[in-house]
Image (tube, rainbow, N blue to C red; front, side, top):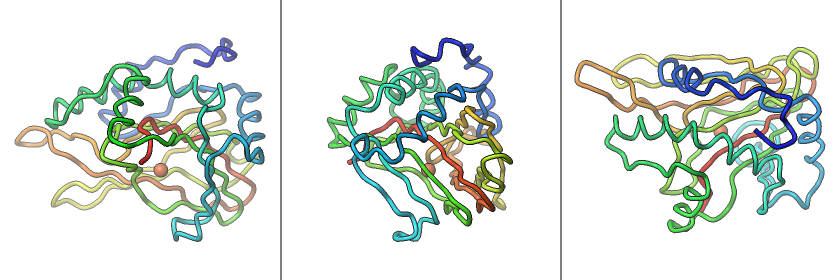
Length: 235
Ligand SMILES: [Fe+2]
């Protein structure tokens, strides 16, 4: 965890990754304190910490604004990204073996170097803000050829207090089956771990790739802030 978050206990990563493996996503215990959540929200207006801003309606992505952090990432984001990576790389490599994909490095600096070798230099952690009516269409987060298969979204607002509505939604498309919808409601500081694009599901003839898309249902009132930690960099 970030150095200044020593009050927070270490999550039980094997339980969390087991849950992602079996259920498709998992909630973590709080990864940031309420004060740290407020601190990250406070960065939203600081232009110097971001490299670009996306107004979602302009691209028909939904309704809301997100901002990609610039390099060097602010320490709290850099620490989270580096600390969250290794336990998730274990699951990513388990999945890679099941799907016959290339495996991933065990540390974030090695992944970042591998991304750079593929022309993916731009950092992908982002800060998202949804106001009333805000939502995020179902999507996947592909930023180049190298895709690390898991990401973490950290809830920075308090559901039912700072905002209403705005649930995290997932849709899983199994081949030749009807799609399955799932909903998550992370609390303040909690992380939501989920696939960027797909995951292996065991079938009659071994593991097969099941596509997952994620989004956010409409915020009814208030403001919903989330810190998104994607591990692969963008082209
Ligand atoms: Fe996303």
